Image (cartoon, rainbow, N blue to C red; front, side, top):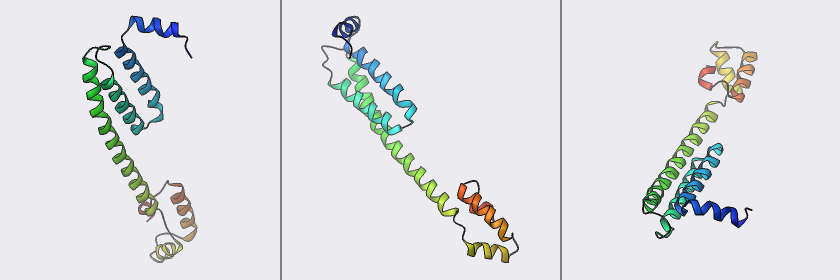
Length: 138
């Protein structure tokens, strides 16, 4: 922990709004490597609430407006993050369902003269590793 003299000397040069803004920027930059839009949204909403609840005797009025803006932007970010996550899950489920090629598919493909069974094993391994889709295999 910092000694109180260091914190006091810092706050004497700046107001509380500037210190909170610095905290918001540092928290946002610290969350960026995690690549979580939900975390950024929660951070934005929390700091918006903090800016709104900070007494106006301690900070200028424009920090109140910043808090209102952050409180509006945060839930929007959270909403778009959950939709993006659902789209990613749907895409991965589609990829998994397309990659299931069974031995009956192998017999069918051999029957139509597409490729032999040794080639089927190679393509099945490529399907399992994700390098090939079932549509490409045909």
